Image (cartoon, rainbow, N blue to C red; front, side, top):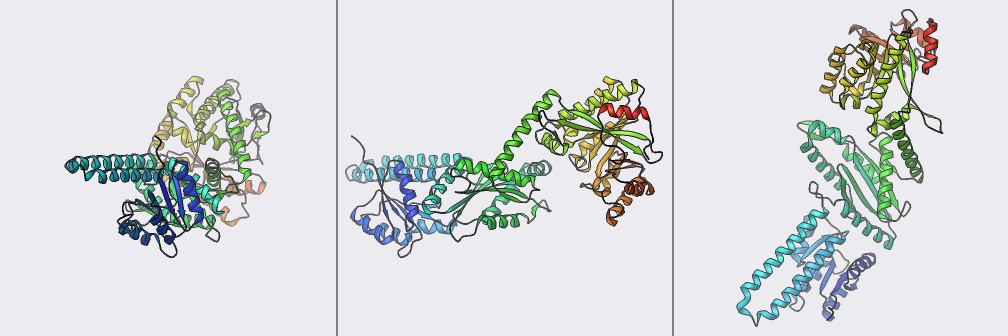
Length: 596
């Protein structure tokens, strides 16, 4: 014999919410009635008592608290379960609802899974209780057994709720996890459609959080992430939702009513509160976040698409310098596709070793002769123009392929040095750029030793150029690796000096032979007084530490004269020679001409 579906009464002055709840509950097989006011709800309950009531807490006229008290004060209706829905998330609002007689208090926007579970459990408990009352008159002697059964039933329901929490909430932050966030977003989209609201999805990523964990440890990292989430929550309206998607990536659902604060103002507020330092072991640590936003209905109408678009915009924010945000645009999809195609082509190039080395001469200002070259990586993408190193090298680093390419470069350079020496061309030294990843990953020192041994060349012919920022990465291990390389006989220089983050104290700690002044300081000398002063200071500092100095980016005679006058040891730049393919460099080596 078929079971009659339970009847649920929905009481809310907001027609959009009533319709949304009707759709949700009828999809689960329940019958629904609805009332736009507390007064009408009481009249409907008196005429036809429902099996359960979903009751809005805040309504004009008779509010939800008054309605609940009336229902619970009447013996005929006191056993009807009430789930109160509150737009307030504070604990005081929950307590007020429970004091008024509600069995459960849920926060708006309501989460599907949580609502269904509460409705199901309360209906089961009511049915069990009704059955208990009918039979208690006849079976008084079984009261103790029934009590035990009720406790078991309640325990089973409690287990259900614990399982629901484990499946839907992040244990560290207590926020909705990815699954629950998707469900909530789908509900929010339905509500926005019914009410004509705008909705924004915002993805948030803590910048450099992995490095923070490496330095401070995961326990401190978890504490900072929890505080980060607390600050973020305080920036939101009661109708908004914050969830933890994965690791240190969070996501927001911003429900934007007409006349309400827009998403730009909200993310600006988030940026401000996150700029306040976090207190970590008696130290102030500053964190920044990158954020991306996608809007409904402008950018899409489904949850998965909006999250994907927000993530695309967030990645663009990271590329723009972090501590910022970007709104999604259709052009970003074109750029993402282009990036994916570039990554695919790069992987193929790495697999086929389809790179080429060019060499830019370094000129001694003492006698104007070539004193060495710098090996520069080039990539000619098949069917397209050459891709600048400034574009593809950072992508290789992000893809984790730079170490593999770096090993190829060192092996190729060692082979080239051996060939030049056996051919009688003789180049004094070849500099190779090295990334922090290369030093940190694998057997970097052993790989270099292997290449030197294989091609039977002395280590003194190989120079390694590292940026300042790479020296700051994993510092103790970096120092140990550089000392080992120095013991082999390699020369080590700091590239782009003056643009990174190292302090002068590090110059004495690292085994360094040379400083390279960045093109940013050379570009406007001698006319830019500040750049000229910085350049002179770097030269004097290096010489006081018995280091050589080389300036890159020399493009005119005034720059060359300034550097010569101020005692710079070596220069390189387009004034003297552009980077050359191997054959052209060999022609230059045979000429043995003076460059200055």
